[in-house]
Length: 382
Image (cartoon, rainbow, N blue to C red):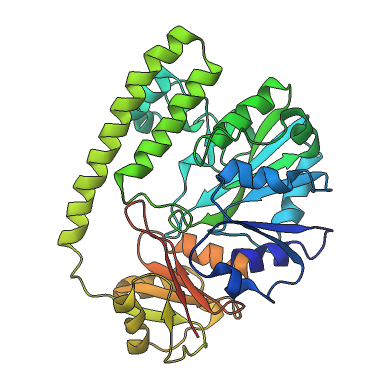
């Protein structure tokens, strides 16, 4: 679905597409053979890491701007048109990041951040940042001085969707490959600033499922993530300050692991709740399917959908109220009936009420992005 949305978003511009596969074991190579003829695929025999994989094709990119994009994302059709319309008003562009929501429609605050510091971490951990979300200092962890629906300069942007100017690419030589998977976007953002260029946040909304490309279901995630933070402070901060930050990062890591485990128990206690289903598409799912992951129980529920398809003009507050009244928990959208922009709008509109699955007809796959405690779901429908 990511590829389909990207290609749809480039119908008015000249673009080249690269997909780097880091030795995946899910049959991706066979699946994508003879699909997406405009895309250049690179099939690595080993997982070289996020930054190194992107750097592999960076030298081959001929455009004025390079978009780094996670595979668990959906872009609206007017993504590049709107983004490039903003660029002329921005000075010394190094990178541009956008407003990201997860698969449940919730804003992802890591769309914009500030450089890691003792104070910003303290304010975030104590909850003070939530009490003063727009305070320049107290809410600096997630760049609170710039609202989620405002355009502005920030220090750090997310590598899940980062537009890098060719000028910044030359100045930085891309990602630091010492960062295997996490922290490379923080490092690159900082080196862009050190090169005298600016990082901008633009409130253009995309979906980032957060769970398709990485999982937070094990302690190893936290070890790798916070290990990358320690590497960053060691690389960029003076020895004394880096030494003072190191134990703080360790404490934050342990607190995050404990929080996940406690929430995981709460989730298990509510796992038996029944879900009603609504299908916002006229697509009829075939009876044969192949789960990409072990989600047989979820896949089987597709065949018990009883609600009739709802018309497109119900994409209003009326639809939201109707869903609440019906106690509908799960919605299925089809990208052959709705534009990607509309799908994104519906996902955000229904935030906090339903789980929303999107059926990608080009690849016959059904995608859902869970919250921070759930893995993403992808079911391949044959």
